[in-house]
Length: 116
Image (cartoon, rainbow, N blue to C red):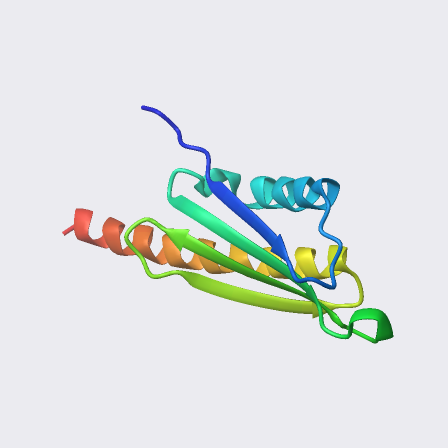
């Protein structure tokens, strides 16, 4: 059985300096958090934005993530924080809980059918 690697797309707005180092960091965080589900995830899209640009501000860094699970509609989460690291971490936690909930409830339902 071939295990596929989930495809991760990374983008930023024009106010955010999205370099290769940041993209690699985000991809690493996602692979560690969602790796065990990689055979069920077809794609994860990540978009970082700075809501206030040069002006700065509290919780002005935003991370939006969308996961596409096989045979399901996409699920999106967002998290705003003071830094991009915090925004990515918060959004990753939300996304992981969503995937666990979706696939866990699916497994539970399958288990109930198998025991009938």
